[in-house]
Image 1: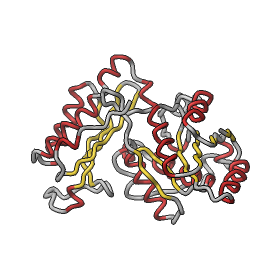
Image 2: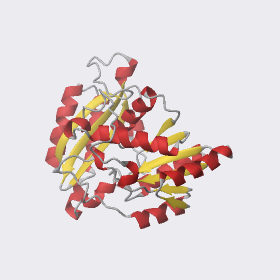
Image 3: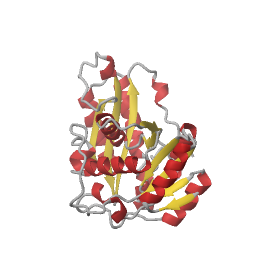
Image 4: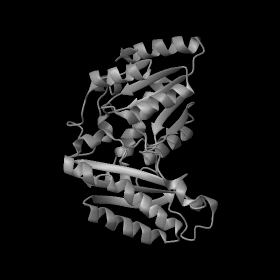
Length: 299
C-alpha cells in the first residue's frame, strides 16, 4: 500500500490508474479506525479495482468546544489496518495541503435544507465543513465511486445531494452500520466511554428497536418520539433528539402515513453519554414484518 501526503503525488497515481482503465473507489475517514471502517474497505473492493482511503481530521466540521484537539490521531496503527484490509493507497494530507489559504479563507460548500436540522441544529456549521472537505477530497482523488457508512445517515444524504447538485461524476454508496455484539453502533468516539457508560450505551439502539416496534403496532409519530426520548433519559443518556423522518429526504412524514414515501421511514437519534456524543438510526418500512427489524450484528 502506498502512503502519500501530497495532492501532486495522488494525482500522478490516479492518472496512471485511469490510463490503465482501472475503476477507483474512495473511502474517506478521520482515522482512529475500527471494524466499521474496514467494512467500508471491503465494500469498496466489491465496487472497484483500486481503493483509496483518506485520513484527515477536518477542522471545519468541528464546532466551538468540540473535540478537534483531542480527537484521537492513530496514523501508524490505521495505516497498518488499511494495508491488511487490502487498501491500495492511503492519502493522509496535512491541514496546509487541504486548506492552503487557511480555514477562514477557504471557499465553502453549503447544502441547504438537509444541513440545518437534526445534527445540524445541534452542531451549526458541521455539515458545511463536511460538504466542503468531501467535495475537495472527491476532486483530489476523482474516484468513480465513494463509500460512506449509514451510521451517519444525515451526512450520507447531505453528500448525495451535494454530488447531485454539483454534477460530480461519482456514485455515492452507503454501507450498512456495523455494530458491537450488544448492538452499539461502532464509532471512533466510543473510546471516550467509561466502563459504566459503555454498559449504558447499547440502550440507544435498543430504544430505537422498541420505538420501531411501537410504530409497527400503530402508535403515532409524536407519541413514539416522546416515549423514546423518555426511555433514553431514564437509561442514563442525555438525548439530543429523536426524530422519525422519511428515509429518502429526511422530510417530516405526513402523520397520516398514507403515501409510500411517508411509510418508508427512518428513526434517528443522538444522545450524549459522558464525553461521547452517540448517534444511531434504524430504518422502518411500515409494510414489512417486525421480524425484519432485527439488526445484523456484525463482529
